[in-house]
Image (cartoon, rainbow, N blue to C red; front, side, top):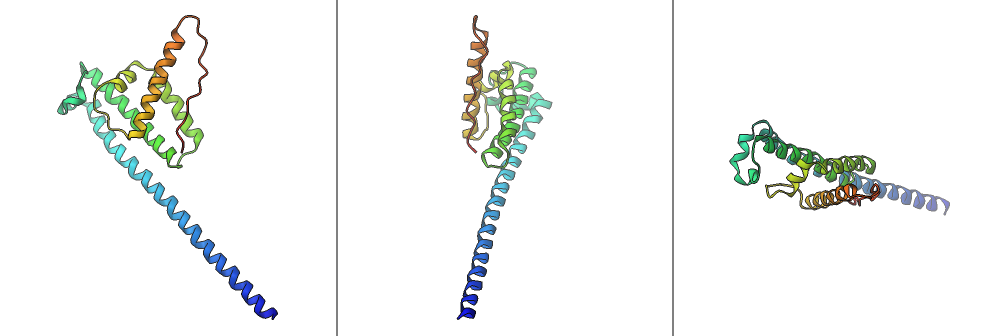
Amino acid sequence: MNLELLRLILQAVSSLAIAGGFIFTALEFRKARAARHVTNFTNLVQLQMQLRRMRVDDPSLAHVYKHDVQNLADDREIREYFFNLMQLSVFEIVWFSYRANQLPRDYFESWDTRMREIAREESFQKMIQGPNMKILHDEFQAYILDLAAQERARAVRLTAPGTVADTHQPSLPKP
């Protein structure tokens, strides 16, 4: 009877080990799939950024699509507009990677802090509020519009007479 019990225990242990191996493999495939998803997204944004860089280097190319230059008066404004979009593209990759649990929170927070500084810049505010074409992930665009609005409001509060420094901590997207 002891031999039968030992055989049964060994079979159970080996079956559990095999099942654990299958579960581990499935989790690893899932992580790899998420990493490929982020890589594909990053590649698409990088391609888009190359087109934007062409317009920074040669602002006359921006006139190919009339909507791209709507309300932009000269080459400097075109360069600033597309330069800001390029900066936004890099942050979009960071945002997407963070949302896919591919970046740590502290790294995302450092980017978010820097983007809030950039969002206070006049050229960035003009870019984000302008009617020109912006190809962004819909959720990211909503996040950036909210971020820019918060920074506009913060700038108004900070410049109002008799105000103290703003300590509002913005809400970060959930990964």
